[in-house]
Length: 341
Ligand SMILES: NC(=O)c1ccc[n+]([C@@H]2O[C@H](COP(=O)([O-])OP(=O)(O)OC[C@H]3O[C@@H](n4cnc5c(N)ncnc54)[C@H](OP(=O)(O)O)[C@@H]3O)[C@@H](O)[C@H]2O)c1
Image (tube, rainbow, N blue to C red; front, top):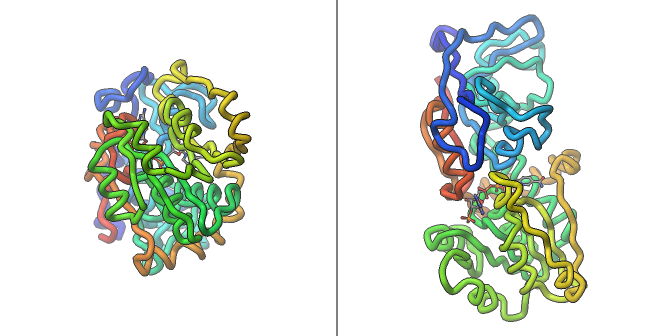
């Protein structure tokens, strides 16, 4: 396998600190020698790079970063890859793994936070999508925090994305009804026709928010919020009294946190609403339970998912700009290399 390896490692770095919506020209690809694994380390060839909304906050220095990133800095990101060279006792060449390898073609790991993945149990890309962190987020929301029950109605924003699509489908598997919100007719059609939601409201068309009330004549028991801002306010208006809101994401603010709007607490009081904040890292010890529940549904096709792929590491900046302007349809991924050489 090492003989077929490319000689250079390409990395995607920032051309300048980000300001507002990311643009493709904010990123460039640089080339440097492939790192050599030392004793106890392994070299990993990246196959799929996960692009996630939190990476915008990380670049700005607001998410687990010590400072805002600037020119020449490479964002981190979770990848699925294959061990290309191993000097690690527990990993062999050819093993598939997921780890935080960053926006590049190769990375070296000492095994810390590097986990084996099995292509027989699920498609490799799913390990950073619906079976990875975003899927665990949906599981934490529906099973652990909202404790969704049969007969309830669940409303979720960004319903085509990896978190939203799994929130709705996990809820449906518990006997609940899933209603989505998404930003285009195309997205809404996929949410209903491919993912099986009962309805989906295109919040950008003129009928919104009237159509939200049409879709939820009796209101929602649970609202899972991926977006914040105006959509959170609108969703609250259709929440049943004593309903639950899972506060998961604020993507409408990530490019410009100064635009954050406050919640109308009068509505919260009048609805007697329960608001719960979700941080997925709190649920890492539940990852195996989540996997055991969801992986069979993925394998037998009970649960579906959408992916938005681009080919080639050099297109990472374009794909990230698409994700952060709402142009992705499904899980945003970069295909960096073939699944096997
Ligand atoms: N709390 C946690 O631990 C945790 C963990 C994972 C993810 N999250 C959050 O969950 C949310 C969903 O994540 P995901 O991975 O499933 O990604 P995603 O849904 O693919 O996120 C992108 C989508 O967000 C929607 N969106 C709404 N307003 C937007 C705006 N102003 N700018 C850009 N996009 C906008 C767009 O869909 P529409 O056009 O359909 O609106 C867009 O396609 C994100 O907010 C993320 O940060 C939180």
